Image (cartoon, rainbow, N blue to C red; front, side, top):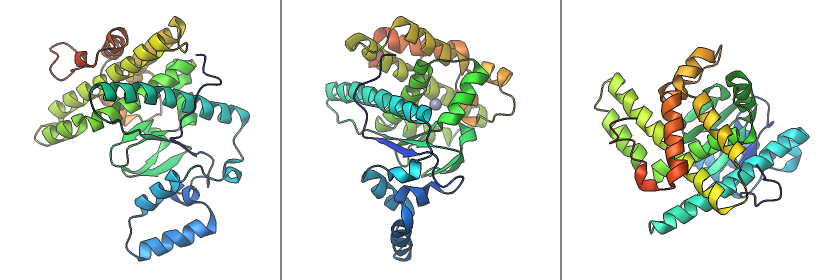
Length: 286
Ligand SMILES: [Zn+2]
């Protein structure tokens, strides 16, 4: 991917190497002053997740706190930021065409564990999107391990993962997540899982939509990149993950569909660029 020198997103929150295994909230608001404000806020009955968000919104964590990042870590952070910016461009335009406003999600880079509105998560869950705070969470160390383990190398594989998670955000904005959750509450586990598979395949389709426009309108992707993406989609099918992961827990991934299904829906988005073709919920064949 030709990504160097491109626009970076202002929505990346870098919480890597902050406070070791500690709470991201301490690092996020930075220093003693932040803690005092947090304590006051808690005493006054505020919601700590709100204050973290406020501080995140103010901009980056002080650079001294991320001083341990290696050159490679920094470069990966920049790559993520460029990819996110490109994904923002595509969804801003797609929503504009629908006559809607696109609310850009934030992407939180973390190491080890992170606190989100969806609870306290370790990197072992893999990348995830939390509808409660509209953030995508990504642990790049975990991602590198996954790449090795699942044999899905390449920078586009990472871009695909980000586009898939932002796809969940798009579903959230369109009300799809909510409908699925409501329906699932009335279902048995097996049926509910099948609905999750359709939700996941639609996120793959939405990743494909991004790749379509990224390839079409900008000198950003080439066909080798796309092959990487297809390989990545295939590598993270439930069937292959179950075969190949040893010691990893990837609960979100157990209900994503098979490799073949994931590749098919990614490709459908990629080739059509047409949102109306992404109704995985009424598709008779997945
Ligand atoms: Zn997913």
